[in-house]
Length: 127
Length: 170
Image 1 (cartoon, rainbow over the protein chains, first blue to last red):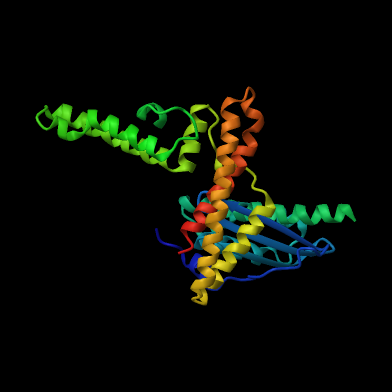
Image 2: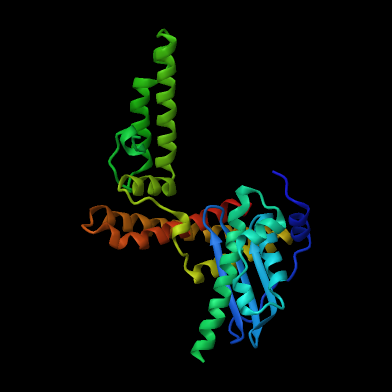
């Protein structure tokens, strides 16, 4: 199986690797994984007035999982919360030209986005 | 299709020991070993070989605790769906941290740290396997199996992460 140029580019030069302060009230954290391959993905967003001003990720897994989360953070920056939740795994599959056996990596990224935003929202509701 | 337990004629339980599983394979092997069919017709020989192959797969399934657990859940019509379980976020965060430490230790060629991490992972795996065995003992005889199923699947899910993490840490 050959990785697309875009996957290789994200794998070799991942964007936005790192962490945001998990305890901060304007940061939402999502952590998801795939038990069969043991991949784990953490995706965080920092939100100000409904807009994502920063996004970071940390993924331990295959090239596609790294590329999916790297691309997701790139897309998330500058988006409103509403636009972010509209991101679908198929968008990632298309952009990265992921082969069928790697589609679950894009699903992980979509799940991580949703979890991060719902974590942020539950923090806001608790305030 | 017959389950691995049925094929080898061992009790349908998670708590099997390896020597019993080996003895079961030897006993069916005595009957079906291809050497016994050296003078038989080609069709009979082929059948014996197919049987032996199935027994070997069943043996490998039963010897691996995670595969044995999944086979057992199948027998009880509670198939394990790895994606149907929502892993505990704290556990995943913990795995992420361990993976990061493993990654750093490999980058720094620090075999002392690496070995310690793998040692701890193995210890944790053993601990969770013992927990799994205990859970299965209760679950197999429970009246209401669906009640404790989520807990069992959760543990099985965590064990898969541990197993994969150990395997990819070298």
